Length: 490
Length: 136
Image 1 (cartoon, each protein chain N blue to C red):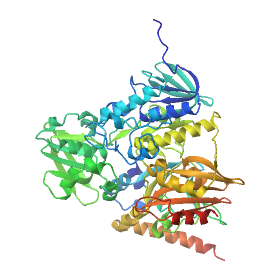
Image 2: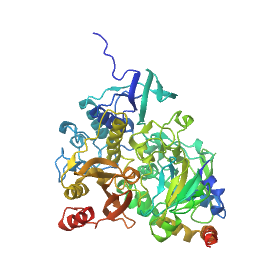
Image 3: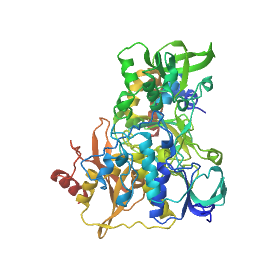
Image 4: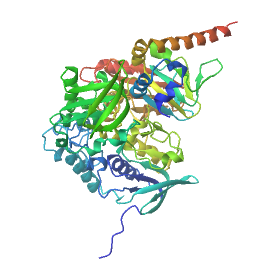
């Protein structure tokens, strides 16, 4: 039998997507829908990206409700299913819920991985697996990616690499401690005193996992835990027993705000020197184990050498509203790294770009942006007969606006023949996008935590914002909303 | 350079000890803007306070000469403290890296660190004197 040539061979493309996790799969799907000439490469042998291995304790923190007040193939259902990828064909939508055993409203890691594999297979995405990106260079206007399969040349690259490479804070001696990823067996910590460096997702996840085993647990990092932010965090559901024990004064479990001066291996264990950041004083602790739960970084390889700017201690690429590097034009990012875009700086940042639920929409917006820019697609700009019910319907039902709050908006441009649909775009693109008259609808969260439907109007180059009244059920199609928006647009 | 070390070089933060600087650096996000990107928009509520870690920003107030701000300087404090929308656009003049402190948290931080409040006040007084000098 003749060997079948793997898809996406080395060569010249408009776009190359690197990665086969949810960000890569979603971007590849939409690029193909929009007719962009592209290749997809992945160093892995299977789709799924980080979900082939993480979370360490095998349970996601983002919900999917198999039964919901919306049909599974509907757009509204996406709001209830934060883990399936998006598709236009009904048979490709909502692939995660049928795979769940319903022990929780959160899928297990294997269920999530199976959902992503089903998407890649049923959508017949043409991915070259086992093809590792190794180095990057410029050749005039083009990027050249050197890979284990050969050279790929392209006008734009979409890096969908995840934020999955273990990262250690620069603490002297911390290199002696294992990272979170190396702590798969909690029973190993039975009867031991454990210090966990870090108080974000992985730190609390680890502490929760170790509670039934460890003798004592201290979580320490400079930043105090933000109670307000926690209330909106998916963490609160599953990982906050250690924090609860600490605030109740339970001995043996502590959450401390400290700068760690150094970690010293001593007598088979560790000694730590800690300085209070929100309190005056110094602590010295001796423990059996130290674990670095200081998070992850995007595996950027040689991109910083080409001038790629980063945020968050070099862990995440710094991105424009359309997820292009702020300093390396033509380098785009999909997936979890889209959290590196700063948005419009409106109210508290509440978009979900670091989760599948949010970045799947970013991927569609990015694919449209690339397709327009590369000339392979024109935005349909269909006429919108009645702008008021259209926008109020979007505010009420659009999963893009509900999930990517304050980041994505639905935009209509005003012309002599009425309004034209400009689709879903970053709010910043609307705010800074030039002079044509237009209107945009988005959902924001104010300082008090209220969910506020908000309309922006651009007239004669001046932009004004109009927050509408919040609604207890987030339904904005009633008469009072129609009257208010009608008078704004009149 | 790490954010805490950078902050330690700025006069605004000169009274704070390394652990306190570390807490500030870890508590707020860094944002990086491409040259030409708008950071604050005149008339649109923002509330964020920006400390420039690297690069330059231009304040484009209507009718005035443009004001350039650089490393160690800050902007957005008027909106952050009063809740009023910014009276000027602020645009990244180069690649611009900032530490961004949300308005609601700025108030708390200043109350917790009165030395920081005093240094901020000194800069504000100098800025005010600068504008008064312009009066005929």
